[in-house]
Image 1 (spheres, helix red, strand yellow):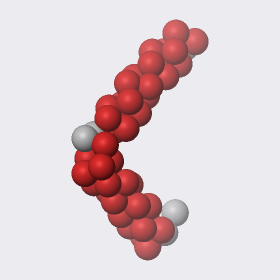
Image 2: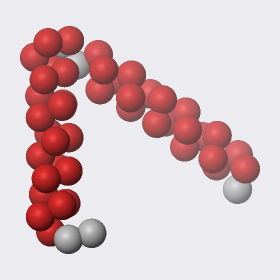
Image 3: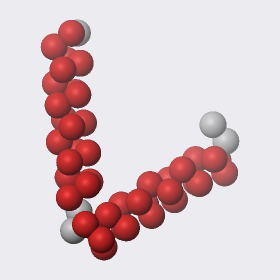
Length: 47
């Protein structure tokens, strides 16, 4: 991955998090964090 692509993707993620905080009070990011934690636990089970 080149630096411009990484910067663009990081910017898109930052904009999505800011928009979520502004419009939805951060509930989307919280849901994503909880689902990611569940995924980590599920993957650790299969390890």
